[in-house]
Length: 626
Ligand SMILES: *[C@@H]1O[C@H](CO)[C@@H](O)[C@H](O)[C@H]1NC(C)=O
Ligand SMILES: *[C@@H]1O[C@H](CO)[C@@H](O)[C@H](O)[C@H]1NC(C)=O
Picture (spheres, rainbow, N blue to C red):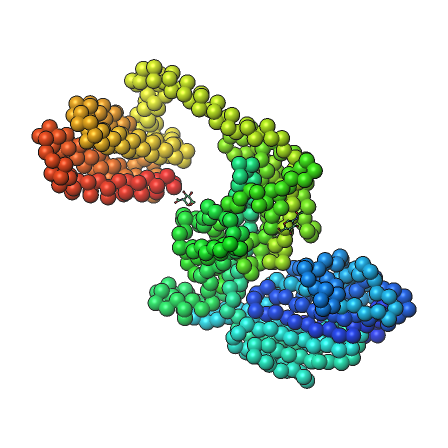
């Protein structure tokens, strides 16, 4: 399979063996391939010597194209030797390069050496290459209880345009079964590591394919798309909302999934699935939430100490190979840890990628939402990516908030570096929202005064009366015309919700009147409250009838009409019980019975009321979801 590709590839580079690129030689290279996760890292420590007469200022690294197309991240730094490695080392500039006369099956990157290498000098480079989607599940499908096996291919020799004097290769495997590996001269297994070499004096472009076939138990967590929204509020918060489209990128599940088997023995029958992900957040994070299409998931766990906060994210169901899930993860961070000022500008300095461990993100979109009124924005990013600007309108905004958007494909954890968004902001703008709120409340207040001085009975020109007329008409005459209109069904459903909600509010008022009664003992006030409630309920019942008739006759409403009917029935039952309870209590007060006696008399009613209220709420929620 893959070996044949390698063989062709091997032939094509045989042409090159006479091709000598420069005066550099690699005197020693130690390569370490880390296969413990689905994101593959190759770390090479390369000692280079200038064997020519002229100074050289660039070093070339080569990848076979079937690897190069999966290269997600490449970095190089100069290793100054022992004792000088404190602190992070500056990474050297790298660019793709295509030296003349090289075959299309190889891709080159040129590492710029700022100081160059003079004649006879040596230096050591540490090169990190990170690959995504490079492992092939083999077989492609596994049964529910099996771990997946994967194939990895590379060369036992360091593929280089230079002569390589001495080299070793170590392949670090997960602590699990090694099905097979290519055995060569000087190759051995040591614990969970495969060792190749040392090999001496390999000419340029030496290549010997090796294939490792091994068991991988790590979750292949792949976000096909992740949209991170980072919203700055000058009131002290950075709110981060992350929308994940996640897939298990490993071997697909063979046959049907048996939930029963899984529930009986999740360890064995969920072997290849992953049921938890870990997100590492900063220490002072707060307001963490995690929800999916159905609602909040509270099974996630949070640990925190002074250095970090860890959140365990547990999807509603285990994710097997090829399975997908969608969820939203949100949290808030203190603004002062991330927003700084410099030279009259403010800037946000925050990490780019996902806090979830070992996640590969095929498409990462980061949107920074700045406060309304921000201007002169610009972004400083650690590596090239697509950028654009948009506007976000939320409540209380007048012109909208400026949004800086960034897009990166194939993001691996190494891309999770800090980036900065600079902008100017006038502090006076900060007062706009509170001022608007104050004005808003003022107008609301005025409106209330006007409203309470208006006649509240139904007048012949009031919108609700006209709506009622319209429904009566709909119910009786012109159904046929309207049947096609889904919109009308939706409006009817909204009206239904509206009426039920108003009735629930009346019940709340009745409860309040009972509480007042127990506090003040004013029976008359309680009776008055009851009377006005009765009148209102009767009015609402009249509005309800034509609505139900309309829904019953609408084909579009057929799939949920029974629920609507149930809602109305349950709600009516709730009303009966509540009225009964109200009467009993008022009666008891008139007879001056003790609180305990009253409790006893209404206990059963109260139970029923609580249950009914829950049922009504659930049904309402269902109807709202239509
Ligand atoms: C979900 O959790 C968030 C944050 O804790 C909360 O604001 C929201 O009301 C919850 N939603 C539901 C439906 O429980
Ligand atoms: C951004 O924050 C990181 C981590 O705290 C820090 O290393 C870096 O220097 C900061 N960058 C700027 C421009 O302040």
